Image 1 (cartoon, rainbow, N blue to C red):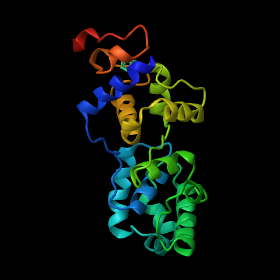
Image 2: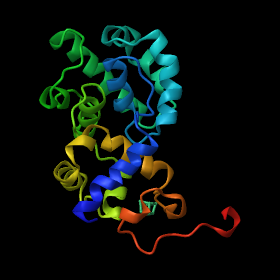
Image 3: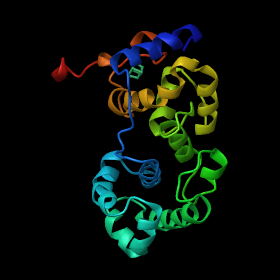
Image 4: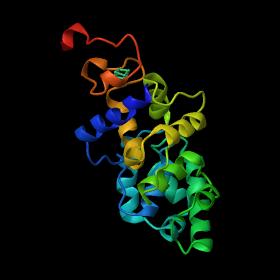
Length: 216
Ligand code: SF4
């Protein structure tokens, strides 16, 4: 993607959706951290289904600890990898209570020191909770960044670095939401829906896919 096309690419996405949000449901920094931690290799829909039952009962580090590991597992067992996620979340809650006054820390270093919190989770929390222009490169952003030519890279970290370099400052905070939504609903993995895509003029992908006959 040409450098001069990047701003119009994001301006188009912004015009269609001026205030993009994560599809994970949360009402506090701790709920967000919990939801993101549970969402690795799971869908937002599946996580929301579980947290709608969990959060009314336990939405603070101490309340999660009070559930005990088996109690916690009973709420999240519909989510993939729930046993290791439960273990990580319990350990994270213990550290939050002991070292952070039960609050979610604001720095990458402190976030990544929490069990189960990797670079991507830290990026989501820093961006969504604290408004920092971080790029949490998930499978959708990785695919869209490469396919469109916006920020090509062989690994998520390479793509993240390219995005940080190439996305203009005015779009930086919201860009990861726009890219996720573009990838989830339009620029889909098996077949991009180019025929209904708003950013077609700026995207390098060729040939653009055509609508199946039945949906024309
Ligand atoms: S034009 Fe096609 S390949 Fe390019 S972003 Fe849109 S859906 Fe994806």
